[in-house]
Image 1 (tube, rainbow, N blue to C red):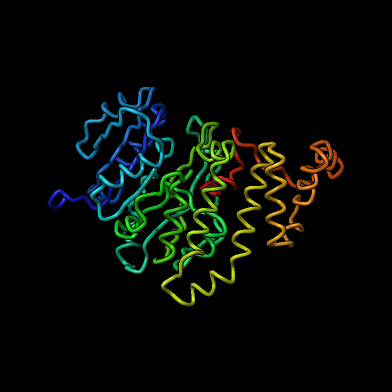
Image 2: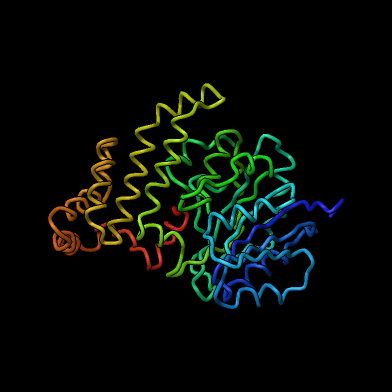
Length: 345
């Protein structure tokens, strides 16, 4: 570290994931390419398991442990970690995920070469609860090549970025800090806010492993219905303000129905997967009111009808269509399909 200031700060909010934590920390300490000028800010949010014992078993001075005696929640914990971070570049990773050894080697040169880029991210692999890779590469809409540019409209429609693959400039990230109280997530909030002022750079390389298990945060925020109001709060904030770039502002306004419609469809599909029929039906209607063409998407009409006529209608339709039927969305609490792993906020 130069003058006590590290190049990179990794923020790890910890709560009752002690069984996964060694893999996460070892993934950071195992970075290749000589990129060892970093710090790890691990904030324990009143864990009841062996999290603190695991943290204290690591003797590397680059690990800083902050203890919150009482559980204060994910948002407070992430805000605390970011406040303590000193690095020029910031990374946030949950303790159940892990970085690949190439993470810094693949991303830092992009930030250093492109000052207009505020955030770099890459592809992700899916692993199970035991850390076994179940899908080697999720893939992206960008094809098999790197991509650089403004992504505000795309990120408003859907969060296609997996959190542990992200690294961002400190000044870009902290311009949106602190995360507002009451939000059910932090990743999509930061991704949206950065996209309003900075370009993204996508690295066509697997940079991290995302762990799918029954306690994933993205499952909980569907069941407790905190994701929907949080997403709408962010959208209302963005559409209640004016972008500095006039062309971007015009494009944002033109895409408003598509943005809100896509998010409502995402809510509807998740609620349907959780068998929360009334909420699914409400959100299907909101999505179709804004984008009627969504009704033509495979399975949407059947699932919407099932929220009115009952699940037996849907199951019968699946049997009649057989193998050609579109699969239902995964229910929260069960492992999502690999293609859905990037859709959490």
